[in-house]
Image (cartoon, rainbow over all chains, first blue to last red; front, top):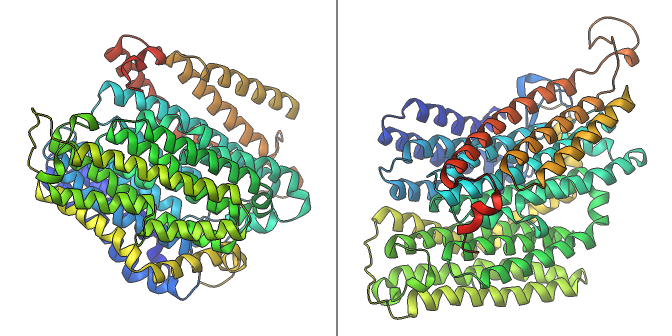
Length: 495
Length: 113
């Protein structure tokens, strides 16, 4: 029985509806949303992984329609990884948000939007149907527009307009690609498409669709020339929103990119190797240079989101099994560490009342615990051993050397140094420097700190358990490269 | 019919792209709408354009049947587009209230970057 596969989509949806009905009672809303997201982790640990561990691809035919005609959910290890990451970061950020928004006028609106966002994210991870992917992308986008504008300040509205226009252009391009594929193959089932697009007749159309998808998902993932909307909208949003957007949302674009290249467009994947590596290099460099120039901690970390996306694209571009495994490990690493860092930025903001690094100072002496948290996450981001960033980057560099992509490897290492440099900038300004004379440090709520510690601990755990996590990433990479079992699981007659 | 559709889709894409490159928020919103229409018509055309063909039911050669699926897809896309349009209209109205302009560059004047 695979009926449980709809749970990660239905649970946030049901909880969102409940939260709308309960808009008068913030306490009830908190309880409902915390339960819903915590149950996703329980579900992933208790039902999904035991079934996935055996190496099979789980499928669910909605409404009992036979495979290429109805809508299917198809879950392989890659989807499982993403879903688990989403549950963990979603819960940590939600707990943070409960304490952050505490009784504010935005709070009753936050929970329904946040839950619908997760419905869209989970749907995108689980679906095996290309048009469904479009629909779930729209669901998560619409929710994210609301979240980005939550608060209604001038910078938020202006940023959200940019974000919305970029996202809608991206969706339009994606839909054109979907339409083209339907016109060529007469199906939207991704496994069915994979078999029908393999022939030489489809090749010229596929050659058009691949760049369309690259641009469409590239806008959502904020790759090199298409990231302009991100620094405008992410830093302006409320800090918990920035954390979940920066940690998880851009990675949904990467997920779709990896899924489409490996499953639907394998020939184009090989052909785009140089293009992807070029994009990766420019994304890494431009992102980190942007970050180095910033003096606002949220803006600085937002540019780092872009820079780290470059590493993921680099792994995709290298297109070997080792590179894919490293990319998936990097995904685990970056989602956890990036979200942690943005939550820590929230702690800094709450303590000092500002996000301007030059107005902070003296936190090492006065809040040594936060300093340790930051140092752990920052070193993990930069890739210092033995933390998760080191394992991830080591894998990528190794794959790069094996694939003889020496320029990309050199740039990746250089960008790591610049990442470390910009982390040192936060360290010296916020922690080491003498406190400004006027600065008062506000006390931190225990919940804020606890949720941040929890997420940093999970990130450290990803390094401690590097071997098993890597093994899972490697298994997922194997499934991505050998699409046969995926296709036969979706189109076959079992279940 | 196909040629007409191709020209219409092309013209809508061109007009939409042109409007998206403007600085005025209202122009951009209309541009998004045109882009949405262009996409929907494109998907519609992908289901083959047949006048008078019946979908699914009835007898006769399948080559004369109309394909209902793209229309169902477009319907979904139209609903989504409608919701987004409504949201962005309200958003730009709020921006206009807040800043007194609908020029995106002037809105940005206070941006630190």
